[in-house]
Image 1 (cartoon, rainbow, N blue to C red):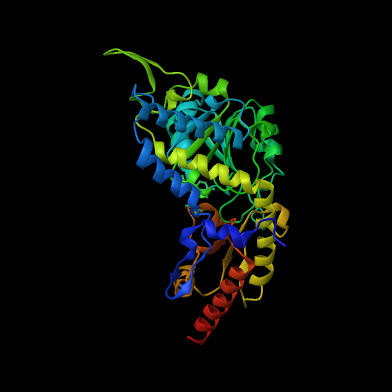
Image 2 (image 1 turned 180 degrees about the vertical axis):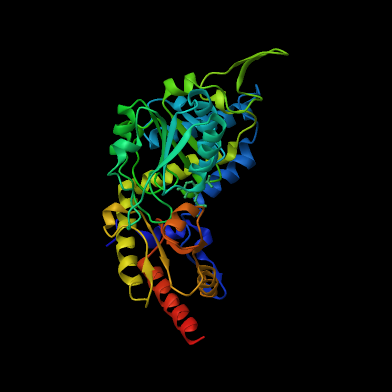
Length: 410
Ligand code: C6P
């Protein structure tokens, strides 16, 4: 018995009702982007039909309504991650832009030659490359927390990795490849003990687990609306005192208080970091997605995904030679399963699965250093969300058995 009433909630997702190649669609790629419920689609539709206007600018009813909806959505995001103030929630394009914002502003202002930045081997490229750029620019040193054979962070040498020289620690909350959930409390405690700030890439966590930025005492946290049933918009949470002290990211409209020809002053938080017309409809749509997730309950979302993942890990082992990546214990992992079928390229796996209307992701999942560590150029990955069912996992496993047969005869 699932923690969610999946068969009825599936009806909320129009895209899942379709047939592909004459078969019912099996969408197992929510780690890349999630599908959207009717309530989110209707919110976007209603916005464009009834209240579309630019925000923070017009002195007329439509503009005021758009502004009100946009700021209400911000407060929903604030509540969702338990931030203290709505001023600590900055809209961005996505997780990638949120991390870059911190690297370009906090990073440039606070990292000097000889300082150290610590990332991990689990990171997505969006939490590696901005730090490489910063380290090169500042002549700082980039270090990483290693990974063990189960694709979890290995914290044995944490105290020698995070030292008095460390200024920034940037880690994922959940790997998009191994699914490992990282022991953030230990990392944050060590980073704070040496005076470093911690930025958490929560792109794969906020959609799937309850996340409380105050309980974690995290300094910055980034996530993407499109992976949590919402549109293409991102969120950066930052502690108010840190955001106040940071220089702006991009310059332009809305982020200023006063502009003179050669000098400007900055708007208050969070607008200082929101230059230009933002993704207004998308932010409002994310508010609807948050409402939807809250109605389900994030504990239930997590429980449903754990049940599904446990079932998937068990069933996938029925596929001859298939090798799973990631932690053995369900409690240590999120709702995805990346795997290798030795001798069969993941792109071939995904292409054959597509004929059975199954969507999985194949490739390096923007985590090349992690794949290099596993000595694999690419993997196949099935990822789950609120609308997935055990039946769909059965369909996946049957199809993978077909792939195995096809390639062993060939
Ligand atoms: N991972 C995946 O298929 P953006 O693109 O900015 O919304 O999210 C980037 C990102 C950052 N961190 C993690 C852990 C992620 O998984 C992602 C996006 C997708 O795994 C696309 S590569």
